[in-house]
Image (tube, rainbow, N blue to C red; front, top):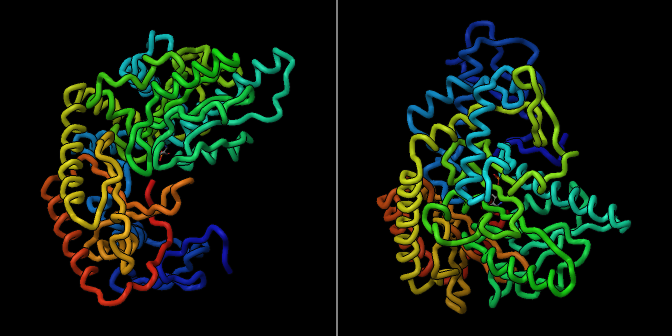
Amino acid sequence: MSSPFSFTGRGVSFDEDLSLNPLFARSNEQTALPQFQLPTDEMLPGTAYQIVHDAAMLDGNARLNLATFVGTWMDDQADRLYRESFDKNMIDKDEYPHTAAIETRCWMMLADLWHAPEPESALGTSTVGSSEAAMLAGLAFKRRWQLRRRAAGKSTAAPNLVMSSAVQVCWEKFCNYFEVEPRYVPISDEHRELDGHDLDRYVDENTIGVVAIMGVTYTGAYEPVGEIAAALDRIAAATGVDVPIHVDAASGGMVAPFTRPDLAWDFRIERVASINTSGHKYGLVYPGLGWVVWRDRSAVPEELIFSVSYLGGDMPTMTLNFSRPGAQVLLQYYLFLRLGHSGYTRVQQSCLDVAQHLADGIGALDCFELWSDRMDIPAFAWQLAPGYTDRWNLHHLSERLRIHGWQVPAYPMPDNLTDVTVQRVVVRNGFSRELADALLRDIQTEVTYLEKLTAPMPPAHRAHSYHH
Ligand SMILES: Cc1ncc(COP(=O)(O)O)c(C=O)c1O
């Protein structure tokens, strides 16, 4: 039996039973359990706990995972709040009106942080992550465009969304699920980010919006939102086609306001209609939280807004999910209170300092070339210096670093740079300078090992390493 969605775990076949160590089995309990069928009988909670605990224990060590942007540590008070609130359902605003009020406070704080002209007239919501936020922002774009086109008696048959070829997969999903043509502007050596160059070749009357990224997943770079907006201004002046921008600030939305306060990338740019961020990335909350904020109510067609009952009245909501955990929203509020502006600035700046320290160390090795000499979010990529060697590559180095427990993904860049392979490190809260030095030593050790090879390494196992 096999399924296209099956992930049975390393080396485990679909038909193999789970065998239970007799030490944990109580008398009369089964010691063999099917993996993919509901067990016939019940078992003691202690036994079930042990099985799940033992399996989860084999997952990687989050501290050594430099591939993910997602938070894996919160302090004791946050853990306590989490335990106290994991039963709250975000959609049940009638039962949990205070959690609902806190959600509103949080997105309004974000609207204010991102310079919405009037945060109280903005519209926002929490989501499960940036992907759900992207679906909602894309949907608002599509519906606004359809309404405008219908009112003008024009066709709505072929909407398109314009973005860099380096967008995160959530935008590809949006276009697929909501039937919008994705128009990817390829990155190149001269234009390593979407910067407005050539935009008039991609934008037309069927363009529902342009996505700009603050913290490109592949490299950490900020796309110049101001330059993209200026290019769209020129297009509007020349053709009358007036296209809004959504900023995918999954990572940068909680970094740039603190470490580059003078950089105008947000609602200070009039063309920016909506912004998303992941509360669970540099918002510093455990997985399961995103945010999307629209500049004002006019950016979201009324028909996309649903009412849920709230204190005997109605409250507008716009989400894809119905029930979902409310605890993460409370954790976000906890952090907003606990850290404030200065706390977030210190945390993000210290991540940037560690990332710069690592980048300096890696860039100093002859075999590597940093992708950029600018550090935007605390993440950076490097490539093998061109022509350096054909005996090993960054996939081999990635595999060798796994021996030490580090997850440092290597992957090809998107179109038109697919022949370039980069490796990337994401520095998150809690990744200390000492850990960075340990990683540098391990990189040095493994480069020395690879350098000593007298014959080329066999082709690396290139299963795409996880890097989102
Ligand atoms: C730029 C960008 N957008 C969207 C996402 C998706 O975010 P989430 O995992 O919160 O759904 C990511 C994730 O890395 C990202 O880097």
